[in-house]
Length: 586
Image (tube, rainbow, N blue to C red; front, side, top):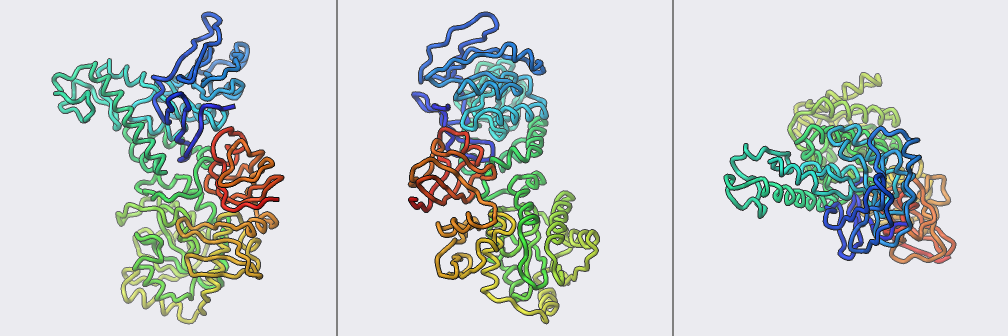
């Protein structure tokens, strides 16, 4: 049971945690000043240390080099003592699951230094260890942290590091920075303003270099913590990890661990997403949106499809260009925006995270990766959704190539309406005349289809019809409220992130429907404000941070938003599992 470590916020696998010592330590953090190592069991048996709450005590341990056969490590397995102070256990990736018997607050990866420089081995080891140890415990990698790599370590799921490597580099005359390292003798200027660097480069010696390296590592950790708090660590990593080949390899290997990252990545954020490179296409948020649009969303309009380019302003409907498109289309067609890095965005999902939360670098040129990704998404979308006609009101740059690629793949005929640019008078007039014989759909149809489409996206394929079989809508877009035939409110659309917030009546209908329900089972108590992890009996594995969840127990029925993933709720002993919006005593 974890008594001294609690996770307070999450950004993918990175976390802001609190190591509850006599003086709390907020992670990701340096652990040098608070780590007490009881020592190795190899030379001799050791007594259980007399630890206290001022330090994180590493229990007596046996470390094994990488590649040690399992039968060897099993033969020399450690019997962990039951202690009542903050403790850490030394583990290897292949034996981490067995070491959880220590009930420690943190786990130290024994072969961390062997892994540095080998992207595949490093990612495999960290992911395997992180998945084996309890979610509400800290992971410590000794002897590997530098100002350049600590952000990537945190992104992978590391909570604690030390200054060992930074100090060693200093003694070698290697000056560390967030963008790599420099040989001290090659420096003409000191590119830092820390106290150690407040001198001329001529008097700056290796002792000062050690001090600077530690200062730079502390500063880099401060940047990482702020990025995690704001939900923007990934934006930082996409640029920062490129300064070293190993870090770029680790970053891209982590992107291949989709299941590991997806489980830990929130389904919504208010922070803007910076889309500045092809690496953005591999973000969990981008892949998840594309998967849900092509696997859950279903167009309920009988009208033609009009493909249009995205806009810099979000949501798209508030931009000048999309206002012009709307004036030409006049509800005669279903509008879908094409964009990198999102793929395709049906008009009903233009508010839904991350469709209104990204900002792309506009160069006027599409990369081959962008064209391939958007074409794949559009193809999957059209395979799932049939239209009587497809009108492509798109410019030549990239968009036209995507449309022609999909035309050929699916043996379809697109109608192209752009003369020179989508917003010129001739192009808009051509778009309007192309749709002039089509019947308009009404405001009510649009509102109903929007709520059902968001329900499909948020809860699962078919959820829109299951939840809103009989539907009344109040208020105006985007502040829509769904009611049943008797007028009881079921849900409200939250414009900030384009998802539904259920009432108790809506939650009960969700539970009674055939739609996949995200349930949190709790003990016999009535939650108010939040449900803490110790009160959770079980939770659906599919729950992600930010998900709408139904909370059920012998004494209460409630609805709220998840603060942990389902697996983390089920195994954690500290922290807030879910916020509670509405609760009813049963």
